[in-house]
Length: 235
Length: 244
Image 1 (cartoon, rainbow over the protein chains, first blue to last red):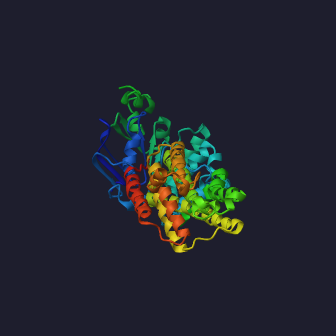
Image 2 (image 1 turned 135 degrees about the vertical axis):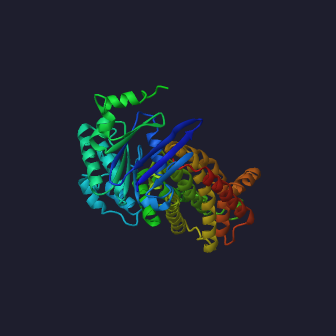
Image 3 (image 1 turned 90 degrees about the vertical axis):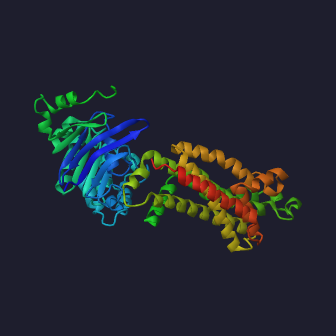
């Protein structure tokens, strides 16, 4: 049984469809990429899956449940784009606080160690580097011991070193048995990490498969992406 | 979880030195400043033989509630929305309502501390009598808190940014504190202004506090006004509150 099933998802903002007829399934233990140019509907799609938005049509099942089923809040970890913390909250306090939100949290100290935050526990959020903030955000998505992790634009704003570290981290998360949904607009990221990807363009799925299958017939996945999708901002 | 969140909120509040200092000590400073003026420690015929300093302890209590409910809480909650902190909580098993409750509890704890301090300093420093009916005083305090928190939550519900929340709260703070008697005790306000004040949260709240200090239960008008504030503004806040 797939971990996430999305069938004919539709979401309108104002008069326009942000997402329409989007369907895909994520299997247990895979790293599933959601690719697309800016404004393609990637974030809207995962926000519907995470129950942060209510779809206008279609059906979503997460671990066999309706996305708004309260039981899912403990089973799905979400790393949101542009979601910060209080400036004066320390890393350790944030981890302890969010661990306290779950009935069976993971050991947050060990998690901090895995994410290279062990020596930052007393540092306040405002004083963290961009990469450290991003890692803390990932840690908070994982602190509840989820079975599914949704990571939105995980590496945006990270330098190449931090990006490599983040990629290693996503692989470890999968190795811990967590199914990962990764939203990205970076082809290299998708190619290196994802078992399968769905390419979205202007709210619709334009391709679905392994990165290698999508790249077939093109010089690279990058070229495949360019020919499949619209330049962002173009109508 | 509620207590854990409330503790975190209080700890974070204390890390903002200026607002923390003001919300904890401003009411006491008001009492001390006025108490140091000898003329204000003389019985005043305008106040029915009470001293001005006696009247101001009740006003200081209203001030403690106004500061946390109108200035601190809307700013903090609007910042949480702006930063996506409310959305992050929405992805956890903790209900966002718990986050709001923690915020209100933290603000209330701050106001209670500020009140105890102001009342104690008034009593010890200037011989202001303690509330004659402590139970009525607690009831009046909670009613006043409910009314002014309902307004603060409505501001928090609609303010798009922390800065906006703070500005709207401050704009409301001054007229509402005027009617509570911060600049002129209610008893000395011209009749029409005093009458208007009776229908505001802090005017009604201060009146109830004042009556409890004198040993009476809050009057029906003030109770009705405060309960109506909760019903109208509280409901509007619940309707309009945006989590993102």
